[in-house]
Image (cartoon, rainbow, N blue to C red; front, side, top):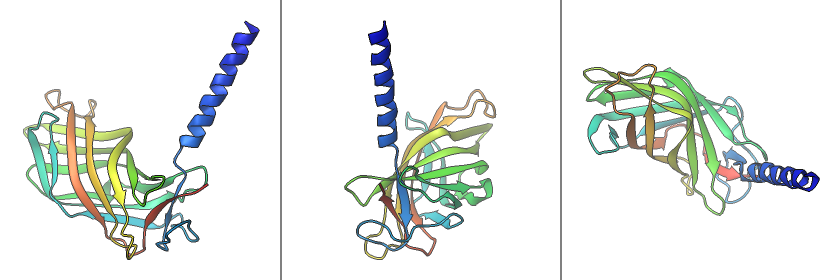
Length: 207
């Protein structure tokens, strides 16, 4: 029993270690450096993006629920990232807008965006947390990112550092508390967003 206890303790310690290593330690660099980062986006920095394609929301079965010709996202950095944490930007409901939609579409709850670097690549990923978006058809359907949803790929402009893109292709789940029971349980969100803020931005892993 003593040996079993020691083995379980070792396994638990190893899993904690693995979890720590796999955590994304990322900063957003404002110097468009080829490696490392001597100047990162500080707390309070504004990160903003606008859609460059029509955003679509459809059931995972392919039935189109909504299209929006315009959408913007703007948030403020609340965690600048470090060797043990990743960059987090807080986005208020008013900072996530929709326009030119076939159905009434509105962000009713804000959330957070996390930026993660990808080892050995200039690209990264973006994770959304929280957020609730209502899509009004004949009844109200509300979808959100929950405790964490991978949005898609973040790609910097390695030439100028400006105009980074986020290619969103993800599935959002229905918020049962605020949705009609007849709403689809999930909706697939597809859209491309390009940086509109004027400071170079590049997700860089740090150690």
